[in-house]
Amino acid sequence: MSAVPSAHDKQPVSLEARLARYPAQQSSLAAQRVLSYREADRAAGRAETRAENLALPLVLLHGIGSGAASWVQQFDALGDSRRVLAWDAPGYGASTPVAAASPATQDYAEVLKEWLDVQRIERCVLVGHSLGAIVAGAFAAAQPDYLAGLLLLSPAGGYGAAAADVRDAKRDQRLAMLSELGPQGLADKRSGNMLSANASDEARAWVRWNMSRVIPHGYAQATHLLANADLASDLARYEGRICVAVGAEDRITTPQACERIAQAARTRLQIVPGAGHAGYIEAPAAYTAIIDTFCRASGA
Image (cartoon, rainbow, N blue to C red; front, side, top):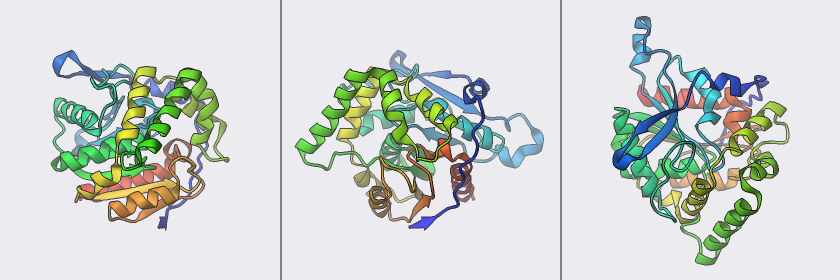
């Protein structure tokens, strides 16, 4: 395991106000489905940034309790140098849910491919956080030619390789919690687990804001996805550039668990000191540096 510098930055007072610079948009997909997303592409219209305009697009996939809006700090930091897009996964935001009640990774990976095609993205750097890493890994295994690099942040491994009783118990526990608490209750009671003990109040509020906006049906489908998935198996089939990183204080996808994912991916694990599960929110400078360095190496 290798370490990267810690960076617990002071958060802006109103990330929600900054988000207005990146309004939600929608792509029309086949069969009258839509995919909602947010985008930063400030370099596109500037002739003096020709080299930046040639930079690979960066595509960001959020976790189970979040959405496209959670990446606003990365939009701010990276949108000047490349096109940055973050989706609302199927069943999140205004995105049409997948058809299956208990979906598999390929159901989400197929939507991702269709959306990239609509966006005319033939090659990109793909970043997945937590559950988003499961989708990213499945996409990488199925569509490696689209990727110049795959970066997994605090990846969830899924329970697809676990015993059936373990898999069912994990799924049913999360579904029961959703039924009991609802999105706002989840945000109020569970969002603190996403961060380290030293996270700022602004980071806590931003994680809570994003979690409170999940849609129950989409969250339930994502819970089934988590139960059905086996990220390590998908990564074993991907031979492209890959990096795995985790916060040292991550209590959800622990450094030990992420080390196993990194081993399956045949790469070293990067550890960010002091950061929790939603590290890209509470320590944006450190995580943005990881993303930017990986993008530049992938595009070289």
